[in-house]
Image (tube, rainbow, N blue to C red; front, side, top):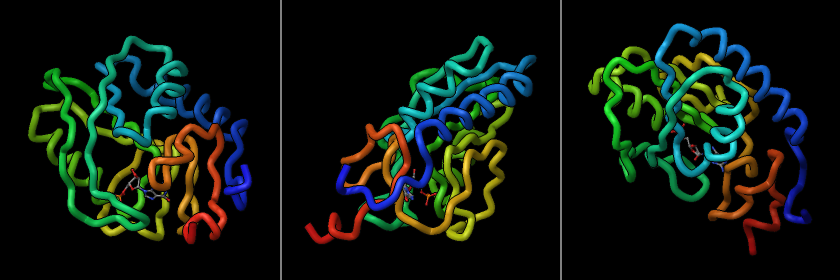
Length: 177
Ligand code: 5GP
């Protein structure tokens, strides 16, 4: 696609990472009550892929928790769509596309703890450690990247590019269109 300046992580690299993470999660959650909690909309492709690489009985649902608009995180968090089932006693694994400041998941983790989850961990495809503003323990991390704005594999720029099977960096010309 001509809007893409650079493919940062190819489809094959993503799929290999998904398999690797799925295997680890399968081993770690064998005797647990796994509940995958995907964050809309960015985590949809990752959620669909990883749930089929985890060889366990599991539940999944989605929440829409937003702290983000335009090209920078705002630092304000709102729950736009909640889950409908109880999480008491369940082992929650939050599935996220990318962790930037960490503010969204820091907030969400606190909310889920107060609802009586047995454990709460995070799996993210991408992380930008240099942007972190809060301390957030991330148990499963796909790739650590520099502070670049990325799109694809669920991630958007103005709601576009989410369906790309790879992760890329946009050409500057897109921002001036
Ligand atoms: P945090 O609360 O960690 O700052 O924000 C995480 C959310 O910000 C992600 O779920 C994602 O929606 C958005 N985000 C952060 N960095 C990027 C990026 O490089 N590209 C895109 N498309 N979204 C990002």
